[in-house]
Length: 563
Ligand code: F6R
Image (cartoon, rainbow, N blue to C red):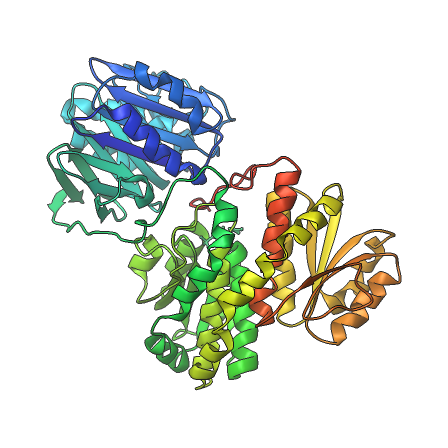
């Protein structure tokens, strides 16, 4: 998934690149590197987090440079495989995000070149080298013609006062400053106030300190830079973003509620829609299916974006795709949309994202920047919007708004039990397995709660529809096995009894206490939304108590731009 950034201006490049790269770290954090150009190319790579580059910034002179934070795909995590990569002459440096699928074939073609890494990315430097005599821009166009797969990349060449950047299928933005310009995988990496030009597939940008020229199919195109307010309230913090973002929920749900949804409701009323998403956003879609069915009697299908292609034959020609994504950059979601070739309505958090740009109609999540790898406040906002859409579809939007009007206070009520939740985490920290059960609305909640526990604490957790336990999984329950039960109806208590009878340790998330519970977290308000908040806090505390960084779970990255 990787984050890339480039700078060209009058200021020293290395500290600026470092600051930007830190903000891109959510995209990958197994190794990092930087190259600057100033009387030769200067290069430094490290294994581990971006902060490890800090001591070397003074050894990287020059006012032009590129940097990279890696999430390994091809080639193990090592200094050698960290970016930037150089060509044979050492005069061309590149950073890349994505996968060059035909790298083996290109390496064959580049016989005689000296490859120093195991990565697919290094071919870009050598492809540019092959054609450099025809001019830097031409050399990049020629390289792009040969590359297959997904890529956003930045090329820096010794002696040239500009960077060249291009993209296909993964995000890349040009940032326009005063007498200095930037390129990066995410707008977040730019200093506040920077105007932005999103690059589209096969566009190439030539970025110098005074100007930016954009080319498509080799021809210059005019594109307008625009201001982006979304990231204005992003602040760097000392603690964990996951915690900060959970604590922002009372505010961010209010932003989700206070928007006009009438056009979205009209579109949903008039069209058959297929919901597609990945991970946590997929769980929100499962909840949407229930909300639409129970509240509005509207049937929708829900597909995992990565599995969507297998169902393409049965999707009606005039159905709309309803794509749901926090980042708006998830490769599986974008690929499903490409395959579907149908109109798209989307629910997106990042307004500058590819998904927002390619959709026919966008509903904004308005959760504000979410940097912690685990989706928290974005999930809650997805549920708020789906609830309002369901009420809107039923012609009862006012009733829906009334139902949620105290949501900020109800979330604060969960926060007031944080110490209890932290103590529960103490009790669970050494468990190997945790089961979660729920029925109806609480089935998606049990899946989402399990995902949070797994990714943040690395404890095996599984969510089930309560009635399904007896069809197999009950065999795993023994004395002391923790089972988190979302208790919002009488029926789930039958399943809680089944677990309890086999010695299970019952953690009840419920409106009121029940004698079956060994532990109890009280929940007020609209249960499908508020009941997930204790699970977010529990996962956070489990991760911290077990010594892990919840913002950077192993093997994961926030914006999943590879398929
Ligand atoms: C889990 C998590 C992921 C994302 C998934 C989709 O906490 O964050 O499962 O939900 O990668 O991401 P978006 O919503 O950006 O498409």
